[in-house]
Length: 189
Image (cartoon, rainbow, N blue to C red):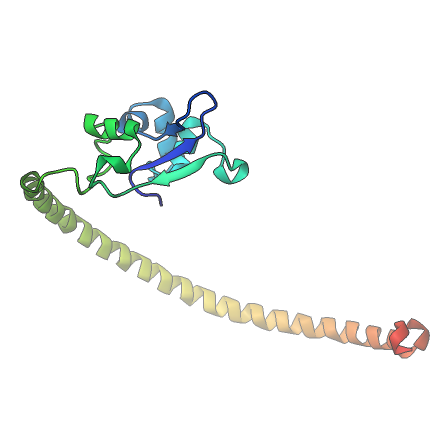
């Protein structure tokens, strides 16, 4: 999985700076191609494969002329190409992540006052759902093993018997042929 923010650079044929390809929330959530991207890539909307999908870029391994870049260090805008820095400042990534380093300490403390109860509510709902999921899957696994083990034992019994019959036919055929020196490889004559 790629880092937020990811981008792809392609050397420009007309200008000195590379072409920069990245995705914004508008492209992913309010665009027909973005909706197809969501169905195709099931959750990885920020990565290089999503960027390639959206812009119809070839796989970088097949061409070697595209460069995958990413940075999760938001401590300075200079860590990003200027076009991405402008997009960050405009809020074009709203809904795609909440990177550390963009807010002042007081603003981050305010964010935490909102985030913590929201996360507590998320955990209150998630934990029983996970427990129920585990209960169901463990029961299903136990049932599966109950059915699988005797079936596999029967398969092994049949397979071993069939292989023994196979050996009864093929072993004598091989060694009967080998017993005649004219059938032997040159080194064994």
